[in-house]
Structure formats: structure tokens, C-alpha cells
Length: 337
Image (cartoon, rainbow, N blue to C red; front, side, top):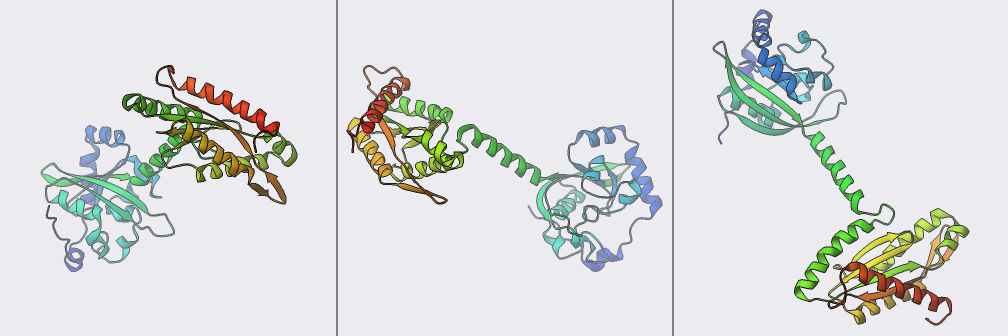
């Protein structure tokens, strides 16, 4: 779409602003329209009506949220950039719409398109004066006529609000599936993920195994070194386990000091090798917390999904859990190196 060029600074500066009486007349013409007030207050964004000189003749109350101008007389006759304190709007005597910056400003381009009879949507960044933060804006413009005079309805949306809402939504979604301490899947997310793997495994008859892991003497760590040390050990345990897992393996915090691992396309033999490797790595690790050397070790139990007898993932987890406590008992008795 070809957009009209901006008027030159000289041409624009030579065009005098409408006198106050003319602006008041145009403002009253719009203000007296019931539909104007209804729409203006229904729109949850900043709404202007601009005359042919790009001057504001009507604004909804949203303008009070982004400017210190509180009365109609403060904004009547201003151009949008002047109202929202765009620093470029004050660089020439011609005002908003006549600077070099304006030639690339999406808001100005949208206004020009509207005044030439075409709707437009643009985005722009407005750098403001006096230390005010910049505005990330999306603007919509629509050409309209009232009493045979051409105007532009100009709606401004703060994109930063969208970005903040998106960030908060991402954070909420992350909190719903991620354990905040260890930053691995939580129990709920694990079961949602494993159900997909179960369906795929049954369809293609691919094996998978589950490893249940429990820290040895974790209560002693909390009692002897404090809960901050226990939290630090849990985070270190996660890093250790991840170093011994593949990208496709799924690690989750099952609860407290228990973790669970899903090993796709891995049978019992392969699963046991992974469990042994992780236990050996933990036995060799000493975690330094402040001035304390804290030995880390944990026990693991492994179970493979059995296609002929297992009904769901709970059957596999139950067997892995039993193996875990058998392993823990043998390690206490010194029967496992």
C-alpha cells in the first residue's frame, strides 16, 4: 500500500492552526453527538477525533491516564504527539507531524492515510520528554465525515499492556507446570506428559521405563545444616540428574525429596543402567554449602511398562516405588556399593 508523503516543514508551518472559535465549534459538533460519548466511553483505549489539520477536537477520558492535561482546554487543538508528550513533536515550529522522525512514525502515517480517506493500523514507539517512559503503541485510524467536514477517528492502544499480560500469562502457565524450587516439571505436569507417552508407546509398542528417586538422609541435611541447605541440595541434585539424562527423558519433582524420571523407548535393562549411573554419580558428589561439605546420595527404583498386564502409569510407578525402597534398604545395609 502506497502511503502519502508528509508535508514539508515549510508547507506545514505556513498553514496556521484553526482559531479557537473554530476548534470550539468542531468540538461542540462532536460532543453533542450522543453516539460519540457512548462509543468514547465504551472503548477501553485512548480515542481522539482529529480535524483536517490533525488537531484534537474530541477525546475520551482515557487521556487522563497518560497525560497531565486534565481539562478540555488543555488538549483542544493539540496534535496527538503533543498531547502524549512525544519529544519529537516539539522539535519544529510546525509541531507534531513535521519532523524527520515523523516521516517514519506509524501514528503519523496512519493519520495521513485516514485523512486521505483510507483506514489504517500501525505500530510505533513514542519517546517522551521529561523522563517519561516511552510508549509502545498500536493505532487505528478511520476516516469519517460530520457536517460535510472530514475528520479522523484515532484509537491508541498501549502494546506494553499486552506484553505485560502475556508475560503474566506465561508466568502463570509456568507456575502451573514447573516446580519453583528445582525448576523441573511438577507432579501434575509429569502425569499430563506421561499420558501422551503412554498412548504413543501402546500404539507403536515402544517400551518405556520409570525411575523413582529418593534422597538418602535428607532429613538429616535439613536438621544439621538448615532448610536453605536442603533447598540448595535439591537444586544440585537436579543438575546432577540432568547431566546423566537424555533430552527426551522427562524429569519431575514427585514431592518433597522424591523425583521421578520417564525414560521413553527404554526397557528395564537400559533403565537400570541409568539408575545405577545416577546413584554412582551422587555417591561421588560432595556439595559445598557455605563452609559445609554435604555428602549427597540417593536411592533409585526402576520399573518397565508391561504391555500385557499394566493398565496405566500408576502400575509402573507402584513397582518402581517398591524397588526404590528395596534399594534404599540394601544401601543402608551396605549391600550396594
